[in-house]
Amino acid sequence: MACASRAAFRHASWAAAFLLCCVTLPARSEEPCRPGARSETVAAGANDARSIRLADGRELRLAGLAFIASSGTSGPAIARQATRTLDELVRGQTVVWHAPKTTPDRYGRIAAYVFVNHAETPVQYNLLAKGLALVSAGATDADCRMALLREENAARTARLGLWSGSGYALAAADGAGLRANIGRFAVVEGQVVSVRRSGGTIYVNFGRRWSEALTVTITRRQEPAFAAAGLAPRTFEGRRLRVRGTIDLRNGPVIAAAGPEQIEFEP
Image 1 (cartoon, one colour):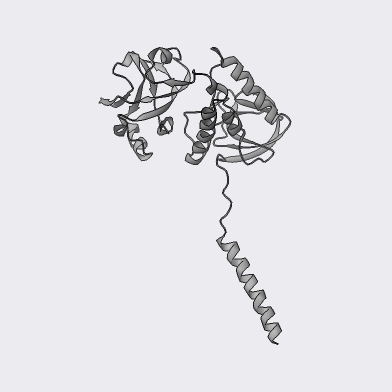
Image 2 (cartoon, one colour; image 1 turned 30 degrees about the vertical axis):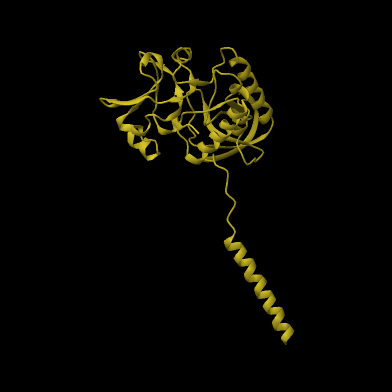
């Protein structure tokens, strides 16, 4: 009887320990960048550095990424390498893709995060980690954006791909270098000299003269969104920022920041 009781006690203790383990062990966290609808199909190959052709005829555009212009000194080589890398990753493979929106763009492409053979991370990580792409200026969820930026920063630190030269991390005070990239997407870094307000616009100035350095514009209507993200424009003066977006020319080089995802405090 005593043996039976001890056996029952051991069984009950084991069961309790098993239940406690099941209750207290944290669930495995899922990698980010899985928004919206999930679909699965076979990829026929890469059309170019930013898009994938599916076996059923549809086309996917890699969400969250921007690519350098296929011009200039190293542009064509980087573009070819990015296309080749993407094609090697996806051709003939089963791809799972998550699309924030299923409506195609004007070119018929669906923006999506693409996972090959049920991998844990999207192909976007691979291109960023090799220095073959940039994180775009478009909004995405915060966890996904941070994950993409980690891959980009690793390639930047290792000076891989497009970061091996000096043409893609532009200096905010280099007016000539900025003017050479008018109309292109770029990542620009520098120290803010002043923050001014005029009418409905906030001007973040990286130089004393507009014509010689970058100016970032933020509308006052957008200011609450920046503040909510910990990027209140009034705190920028004297800080070093990293800004991404398309460089325009308005008396001097300008990037219009439509949302806080375009600006980071430099690490």
